[in-house]
Length: 250
Figure (tube, rainbow, N blue to C red):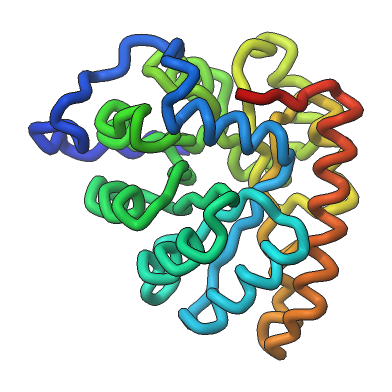
């Protein structure tokens, strides 16, 4: 997997912030709070659809079902409006933006209330440009070199993608041996029944997309089904986190 590097913008997203030099930041910053919420949940629900109304209603079903951390993919129509609406109606939940590949989308996501940003690769311009006071950036990585490079560049947590194509649970287990100090999110092809295994082998959380936002249920606007899947996923995440003693608080 190639690391995506965009040209420097010239200034940081937050003019008062400086390029991150380490992974140690104040405990009250948004990045740390988002990281804690992700680790406490164990599950990040990822929503991608081609209809803004469907996105809003599906998201609400998942949140009402118990999901506490939700990512809206920026290619979703009116994604930022959907995000603002959800942030307003669910102030205690943690929202993020997914497949963020450009600095402008990162800025717009933060302005819309996103507390974390995720990419399928490491976008260095976002990694060094997003202030930890504004949001948590989770870069996508695949190889050990990419994991260590992103962490050394300031990433507090990385997204191992595409995890199922790389070996799934066994790949996470292998990576955590040399990188036990680097938090990892397992993403792509993860099913609800595997949540406990991934977290048991060292993942801080997993990304669930179709596992919660089932394609058939989405096509039929079956929000009861999405609610049920979300409830099951949230419970699996909670139990897995508690079994690992991973739950933390500010």
